[in-house]
Length: 499
Image (cartoon, rainbow, N blue to C red; front, side, top):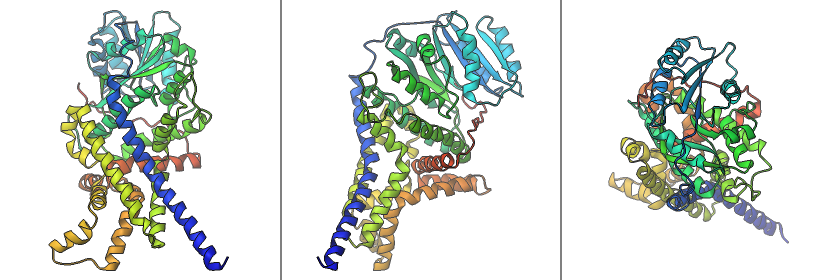
C-alpha cells in the first residue's frame, strides 16, 4: 500500500472516531427523551394499587443550625398536618446553634407538650448526617416510632402531604417514600423560577419515570420517610462518609431488596438560593456526593439483579447520561470541530442530527413538564422557554432551518456573510455545546459584582440554566480529583416560604 492509501485509511478511522464522539453527545438527549416518554406510563405502572390508608406513629427529625428564622413556622405547619393527634412527634436536633434557634424550639415544646422535643448538640459543625444520627439514636432507643420522617428546617409540608406518603408504607415491601419538593418562595427572583422549573423536570418528571422503572436515584433530603424496619436494617444511621448521604440511603434501601417510592402528590415547599454563587455551592455539594457514590457502587452499574433494579441498563444509562454530561458535551464539540477541520461532509450532517434531536426533546419535555405542574408552568414560563439558554435556542433553529441565520437573516438587512464569517459562525455553533459551560462560569463570576444585579440574570437567560448545572458537575470532578475537603455548607434560609 502506498503512503497515500495509509493516509486515507487513517483519515477514515479518524472520521469514524469523531463521529462516535458526536454520537456520544446525543446519548444524554435520547435518555432525557426516553425518560419523559415513560412518564405517561406512570398512570398504569405505579404503587397506588398496593397503597392503603396507613397512619403509623411518625417521628420527625429536623436538623437545625441557626434556623431561628424558619424553624418556628415549620413546626407550626407540621402540627397542623392532616394527621391523627398523638401520632406525630417532632425532634429538633439543634446543632450547637448560636442564634435564637434553642429559644424558638423550647417555646414550641411548651406550646405543643409531648409533641415537640429540643435535642441539643453541644459540639456541632460535623455535617447534616451527624446531626441526624444524634436524633435517630434517641428515637430508636424508644419503641414508639413506627416511621421516621427526615426533613430540613425550612420546608413547609402541605396539610395532606404526610398521609399521602405514609399510605405507601402499608406495603411491607416499601422501605422509604419521598415527596415532591417545590420551590415555594413567596416572591421569586429569576433564579428561583429557574430552580422551580428544574424541580419539575428532575422530580415530578424524572422521578415519575423512575417509579415506572422501579429504581429511584435519590430520596429528597428534605422529605424522606422511612419505615422503622428499613431504618434499622440499613444500619440505624445515616451515612457520614459521603456528601450525598440521602442518595446513599436510597441505594442502601433498594440494594436490601426494598422499594423506594416517589409520591408526586405529596407537596413540600422549600426555600432555594437567590444567587448563582449560593446555588453553585449547594449543587457542588450534591454533585461531589454523586461522584463519590458512583465510585462506591461501581459493582452495581449495568448488572441486572432480581433483588433490585439499580443495575438495570435503563437506570444505568439515565444515571451516567447526567453524571458524564460535561464529558460527553466536550467530546461532542471535539468531534464536530475535528470533522470541520477535516472538511468532512459529515460535519454538517451530524451537527444537524445532534441539534435537531436536542430541539425535539427540548420542545417535548418543556411542554410536558409545564403540564405536570401547571402552577410552576405558569409562573416560570419564561424560564421554561430559556432553560437551555437563548444561544442554544438560536443554534437549534439554525439546525432545523439550515441557512436561516447564514443567508435569510443577513438578506433582510441587505448584506451577506463572507466565507470567513460563515466559517466562524459554523465553528461557534459546533463548540457552543462545551463553551456554554465557560459562559456559566462567567455568570457565576459576575454574580457577586456591582453589575451582577442586572448582568447575572441577563447572562443566565442567554447562556442557560442547564449549562450552569453542567458546569457545576464539571467542577465536582475537579474538586474530587484534588481531594478537596468535604464541607457541608449550609444553604442560608431567610423564611421566604410561608406556605
